Image (cartoon, rainbow, N blue to C red):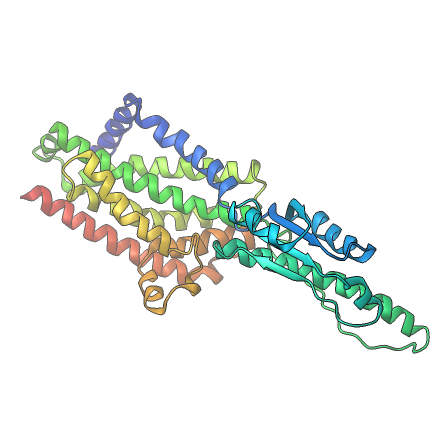
Length: 376
């Protein structure tokens, strides 16, 4: 054990002397977190909208002001006819067009259904779907206002009119801030990228310099060699966890409602998988560049299939089965549950169990491969 600790100390000194590695370890995660925290947002705002108002009445002005003041849309133009809309939509200045037909106000006053036409740019389905939902919500709210006025007049004659109202309560993220959902997930993402790549590069670099072979021929045992190699990266991973969580809570205002101790314990299980992947990559790479590319080859599909960006339920059934092999999938559920819901091991035991099993499996396979690689 003493020799493993001495080897770990040597690794720390080596990292300290490497001026290129230190910014990658401690500055890059903060930059990534801030960039991702601001850029990776699920809600879409400031959607460009072009208005065509054929009616030009008080009621048509009310509905267009509703769109203006909702906070979701930015009016990029008010044109005189529908023929002028395509130019703004083709040039990506507008995503949606609202057409108020002539006779709109007259239909409302006559008690008939008044229609509005929405023209949508469907080239970006995500933005298109959200723009449609926002627009339909605004129109439904105005329809409700008009209906309430009518019912108010009727209630003077008929005092009891039954109605159904919905009261929506949003738990755990009352303001529906996407950053609250994304930042905890970024902890798993950044730990995956940093620990896998750094572990692989550090070992391959030693091999390139020939110092790894020198260590192997010393009396140090293989498990001491592996332990001494990974201890610094585990320590660095926990420092990064603290930095990322601190920036997330203090900078982005993400709530932390769970147990820090539980998060740290389950983080160990996750690190077994990422550092194990780094060890595995180091055994099949001959140069640092090759190690980087190989690590990215394994990480990119894992990130895409983990549910970090795309919901797993939306994936084809056969791909959903593949996601069960992705450790990040389970860690995302754990870290988001601890951060936002404050849940404990009673609710997370199944995720923790599978993550631990994957950690043991990946790490054991990597160590065996590492030992075989250097026994040859």
